[in-house]
Image (tube, rainbow, N blue to C red; front, side):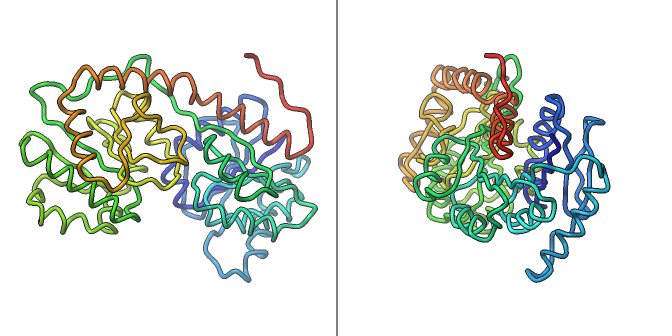
Length: 363
């Protein structure tokens, strides 16, 4: 089987490690992968079995077919004998382009629906696709898949949980005598949720001079956290990190990961934090099945300042409870979010999309 995996600029930047793992895993299973990225974007290839091409992401809607035709010619030229059977698209901004590319290649279309707000596009792309182009939607989370099936019953939804590598043992965090760091991640689009969580962080930080706060720079700008930090008297304790998901090496060295918003989104940054030993404190999210209260994370009602204050105080004060949750989250990621789990789910979606029997996997 030959597959095109296309990602938009934002997704390729945020989830480059996951894309690389998936592509290598598929190649190990005998799938010939062509990586399609926007002009100027690169993802390091760790396998000689991967081919890489570039396409023009930016353009007027009227130019979409022309851009897809041009990309299809480049992809076909890589191996004229074996045309691609699947176009798998990551990043909602290029779903229409991916549909056009699948039409040009005569391939099936697989759309990765990693957040709940892609629901309107699920139906839009299906309605705009040719009837001859089989279209499947892959959700990286069971709750998200259920939601999409309920709200878009005509769509064919498959589940393929994202996978990350977890170390053999979780690392130690919140070490006595060390400066502790709170990492605040998210999009910053729900300002009310961000303000409540950040006010709670200020409640905690003011009484602990050894605690520092780091926040995603884009989210901080959207939620006006810099002004809020000044108002709360903790501006000197706040540092902004450019593109936390893309620059996660710094984030994953922190002590606590804080997720103020509940937006039905999946991020491998969160899975890596869980698997690596960082306690996660998050807004309860009914569309995110990876956030399991007291198993993988400590959950808080979104927008509840007092609940956030209590939860953060517990994480910083109760070493035994944190240790138990960290061990539980590490085991959860290791058992249920291995990269092989994602590869298996994606392969099953591919086989269904091209009408073949599923590839057997050992239990």
